Amino acid sequence: MAGWLAGFGNRGTAAPPLATSGTDPFTVARQRMVTSQLVCAGRDITNARVLAAMCNVPRHEFVPPGMRGQAYDDRPLPIGHGQTISQPFIVAFMTQELEPKPSDRVLEVGTGSGYQAAVLSGLVKEVYTIEIVEDLATQAAADLARLGYTNVHVRAGDGYKGWPEAAPFDAVIVTCAPERLPQALVDQLKDGGRVIIPLGPLYKQELVLLRKRGGKLEQHAVLPVQFVPMTGEAQHQL
View 1 (cartoon, rainbow, N blue to C red):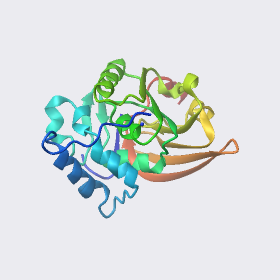
View 2 (view 1 turned 135 degrees about the vertical axis):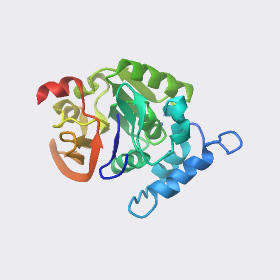
View 3 (view 1 turned 90 degrees about the vertical axis):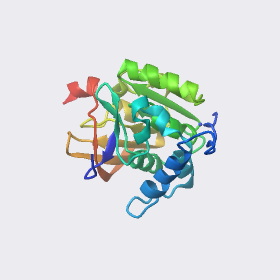
View 4 (view 1 turned 90 degrees about the horizontal axis):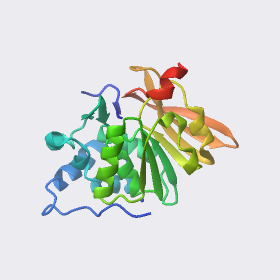
């Protein structure tokens, strides 16, 4: 459910280790993605754990078969049902801003194809991810299980309401844009926790980082972005 940088064109169980070029023809493309899109000037992804995850996770497994040759391009790609997989830089940037720790339990709203959850899987203890489009949730759950991401829990449902049975969370990452921060996500966040979320109407969104301290939120905008709108309950709160 995806995002890209505005102005640019159109773990528990660790993730599988990076394959060698002899078994994975996309290894070189993944490495090139990291060097040319993430660590280059103006992008500045510097967290070594995040970079390793981006180099390890097989992005091509999370796009439609006919688009695998474009999986590591510097842009979002369609995954069906009017949704997209985010630009690699946005995935890396949001992950880095979230400051994931090995002990963290993270809630993701907007599973999409499961790629962002796969990236988080190797960086945190558990990932709980919610997808409102049932077909996407089913496919993502199957792909994540097939690829060995056993600490990712997928649910089909409205992420606006969070996942109260699994709360509280150390961090929340939202990959679709409501106009206002859902209170349920704040309520399900631990004190000291972080939220990274795109907020605002289409074509005027900002990626916002929030920290919960003493029951209050500290907030600052970090990047202009464009994400698909959050659907479901969020649309009735406008």
